[in-house]
Image (cartoon, rainbow, N blue to C red; front, side, top):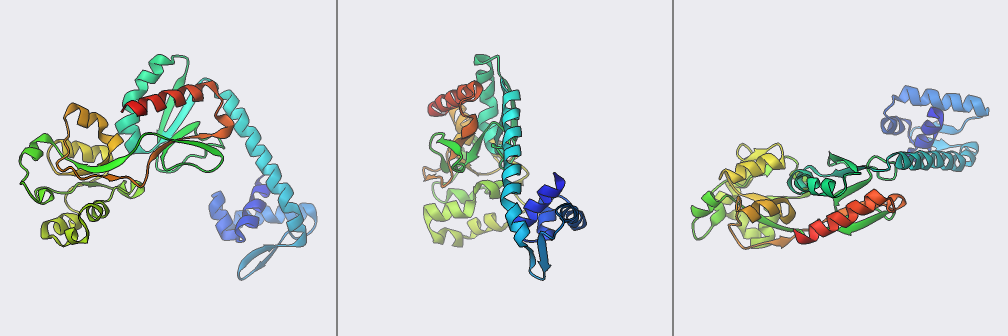
Length: 298
């Protein structure tokens, strides 16, 4: 199996070094596996040159069978994992959506479905649903054609601050009054102050002295996570740029306010993503129906 995986990786990437990186092996280990395969079939399957590695005629004839066989094994084990996971759900989403919207509501789902056990995975890396890494996901943006993808509401982007800070804001140029808070994971979710300010106010906003200082000063107001940034925002330490689902509860309870009316429709929308091969599992259908209803009421 290791020889076949090495063969498939080199055949796809046309390079032993890149294949080794993709497989998490050393280049020497990959070369050894290919040598074993060539010893078994009795002829070379690759020709190496300065540009990388190319398939020999024998290698080209083997490639469809090897890739097809590996795909059949992968699909077979994925189906077995799905069968073994009956009554259990693994949900994968971003840290922002998981902590701010999904986790506080999951207790309601579990009370309504006590026969289902559930695990929540929060990561920016998208899980391979077809391989069984997760049963379903909530991602910014939809999935690929083999996925069922449903948008959860309409995401808007706007600024928020604490009621205390809102009371102290001047009548004009409100964003000069406090730092523009950021968090390190923002690059994954495109919650970017400069982009949003330009969309709302035009390029001239960047020439404002205080705005420029807030945007360039990385020593103030940068946090490790969205949750930490939002906590600082609730404490009146600055403004936060958010999507509507991530602060729905804070706005409803008055912990946060919108200091200005300006808003934009987000370029990225949260979608429920399900592998089509798993879509008819009862527990997945139950979660799908619940989250669609929950999102429509938020």
